[in-house]
Length: 460
Image (tube, rainbow, N blue to C red; front, top):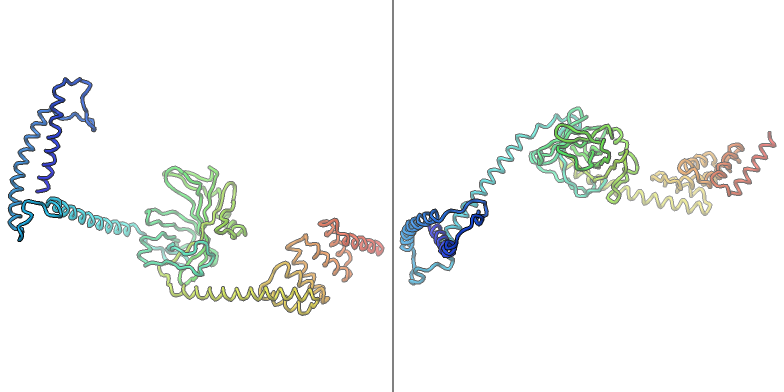
């Protein structure tokens, strides 16, 4: 009530300021074109209407003033003032009508919060109603929930913390891949947006490739054509998929078609079989954080987006921790194996240069057992066999070098020399001529080829 009295007092004060100016304006004649339509385009009230409104407000003011006096008398009677100070004055905290207003505002604010909480509960219940049942789990089928990973560009799960939540929470709020029991198709579900997107699935042993061709409403504003997940089925019993995610952008208008509500990608532009072949190319497998793109098809680009992980609702973190420990052990063992491989290879080369072919073969053989398979390795191994007169083995190793680098004239010259010693003169002559094709200035190869040609002519 006090707040109402205060507001009326302020209103009357404003009217008192306006009245003299209005009286002054009444003395002049108003032109027809000078009508003030107000900010909202409405005709302002006439003077008579204003007087009536003022009289009514004065009456309301008197009534509310009497009510305020009665309320004030009651409160003053209940108020203790032992020192007799502050009678008729507002307290240090301000007038009572501010306090009453704050209390009303707090009540309204608490009511709004309660209503918001009720609305949130209602929204969750609505989401639960819209969530479909999970498909029957047969092999790879079922709901696979996309979970965050710590390292976006890590090729393995080593060191990755999989942020798994409760099954019910993941189902309601996590984006997830829903694969049908036939493991050929399904859909990608976006609960936060309330939409689904169809997907196509290809499974090969422990490899699952998922294609999500674009389909959307409205007009197309981006070149996005398809999203691809190239996943490996890790922890088959514990339900974990991990791998690489790619995006394909197409810059040809005919790469897209239309449907009743918008646009969609035309799969015939880049069929999934063709996209699958790109995934196995070395340049694509070598894409990383620094180099992310690779051209595919006609005016299309494949972009590496990083690593993705999917888990099923029955995922068990304990076996995943065991997997992490096993991967760490394997990494440590691999690092030690690589160290021994490099050291054995280096010792083998050192023994070869000292012409100690037996010790060189021993070290190089150990390096091969540890995984050494470089062209240099096969060259030195062939040279050691040649030095120990194991010519057939030497040719086999040299051929491996030439398969990788046909222009290696040094290795081809060694082959030709061995063929001469074995009496295979025609084969040796062919090798010398190939050397001259790649290096016409090789005088030694030219001289040997000439001598062999003359010798073969004499034999004929």
